[in-house]
Length: 281
Image 1 (cartoon, rainbow, N blue to C red):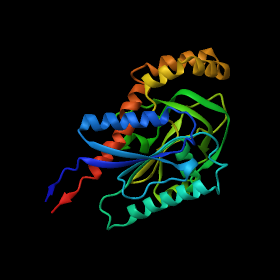
Image 2: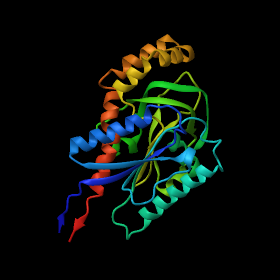
Image 3: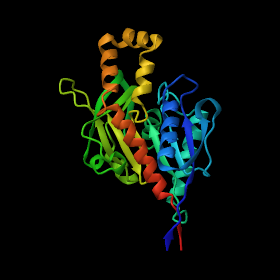
């Protein structure tokens, strides 16, 4: 028996930004380009406009990355696009649960996609925050997170870009145990605020993982974006000059966002690429 190295992989990016201008899609594309170049792989990807065009990928793809997005992860309940999205998720699960399918499908869910999945599987309370979480924040690893290979080399805490008005709290542990899910990380501790800390990352099953933060955020691009006149004005008006300056400083810290960008999604891709290598007998 020997390993036949596979060099070409098909990736589907599920775009949940609903046409809103964003940095997330650019960052995902750049990570894929960099990963392919570094590892001498031919990564072919297509993008699917989930919320505007009801588009989802079929199962000819090897890897799926589902993006963040604007708005409420609650208001879309029962919408046509959400039904199609969850149906896609069901088909991926069905494929992976079939023992006859040796090569599995790997899924990474980011922010809005993560919140939708948590509501869909009923593993926590998805609700609106008292105030927007926007900036660079520490993320604390739990026991399972410290053993999670996608978080290999990540410090505890590590730092990530957070941008959300909603959160997942109050984990339903029985539901998680039943589906084999584990909480990997939670948000920063705030002893002066008597609120439960949000779930920041979950391993849903052997082939699907998600984060409530943005692991795809790149320091250089985000820093340049925040320093544009329009975006700086928006951030300062909404969060203050101090918040804007703090974000610029932390984005340029090599131990913070740069480190997160270089490890989490690339680790996920490395695991998927290794798992997708066919074995010839």
